[in-house]
Image (cartoon, rainbow, N blue to C red; front, side):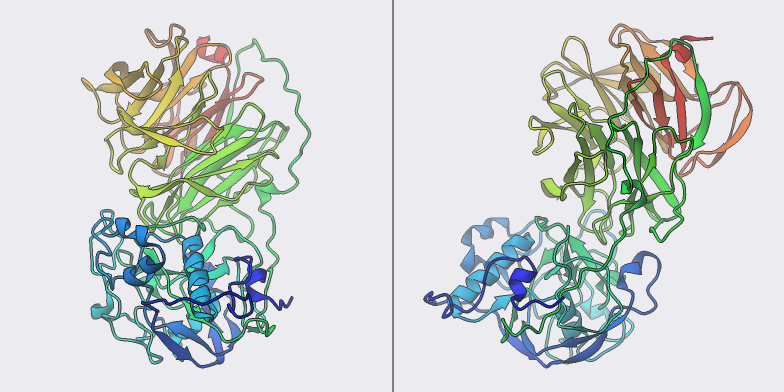
Length: 629
């Protein structure tokens, strides 16, 4: 499909274009970007041998590019702040970008487009962001190697090129490294650069001035940044971010184009199959049967089923969340990766359809390209809307994440565009499964406050069904904390780590989560590879699923946490060998031994069935079984 109005086709803004065409007067801009003429030509875009985490670099395909001009350097603080002076207050974020000639950072895609529009109005020329194809063509400058410097990046061009949990400040001054053959500086590293395109899969056919898909969820970024491994600075490497993302690894440079209505730019909408978990989803409301009064405990089944298609799926599958849907299905999500601090990490999903005996193979649920995706939760709101919360990294580490939200009104068949509801990439945003709804409708989402094994869990509140969130600034004791509301309106949370007298810490708040009092619970502290569950059951009691000497147990309190009883191992007494996945691996279940580890999550369906999911295994039982012998 060919478009004559490129910018409108890319769904950027209405005409950026020539001020003479819009009958607007130009105005003086003191600090204009220095531009370099880029000749037209043809090149092979992408990576013909891409595989694994770099699957999106293939297929390599021939692209024809018309001549254009590109900024020799990334847009600097001095240049951007002539347009938006208030941005100066953001200089020095974590020690980055303090000087006038440093690459500007903390600029969203919308901010970058607005700057281009301002440049266009002021000069009468057409400024915009580069397309992804223009960016790669200009970076290569005729080369076919991994970098324009060859197959390696010289030490002189590297700026803390490692996956640093605590990022290390470096100079972001532009033009300090050797330019490529066409005179462009800082194309490898310094900061990632926004491109105009929506992110989407490549197509194998020859293209002329491609502009990417007509719509999408993320905009492409290119070039890599400081404080990330050099492999992500390769010419062909593709990254992307939500349009509202803004952090200290991300900036931009501009393009000036002589054509506007030339009809030279092609626009592709590749056919992308719907993921399996979102396909053929029933929209019939399921009528749940009455809860059974007879005790039952069903044979454990696996919910982490390997994909049977091309869904990216890795060796480490961990940290699940689960909810039930109005149509009677169960929906589970978890992350899949090779390394927990990896940028390949994807959130995948599986569905246990109503009446089915087995979970379906996993399929992609949520992935911001080239970003760490640690921490997910699912919550069913009272009207049946599903709320998904997720951490999104600025690179590969999970310590500093933005808090992202999406929602579904059709049982998880489709989801709203992701929004960064707490957009700063900081600690306190690693989402924990198990959010709750308070009696007054307030949503409570806990997140790990620290990246280590202790340090507490942060408390985030929403009074508009998850559209916006506020961090209370307080913390409950222990990471991976689980929370319930007590009948008197107070909140009770239990956490991992930060033990008190060797016991799991209990936190109580009587002011809606603004402050907490801490004490020892009666339960043993838990550690690495373990995450507990705390659920208010439909029948009234509160259930804890945690770990003791014999492995996973459940316990009940009928007096709001003052005393706990009916502690029972998660086993029916039969001996069987199971694989708990992730950090658990193979274990033997018996009359005296249950699953020893696992990151558990849980939900209770309206028929009274309690569903506990570990890092791999799905357990099903009811309250009567807990009380039984």
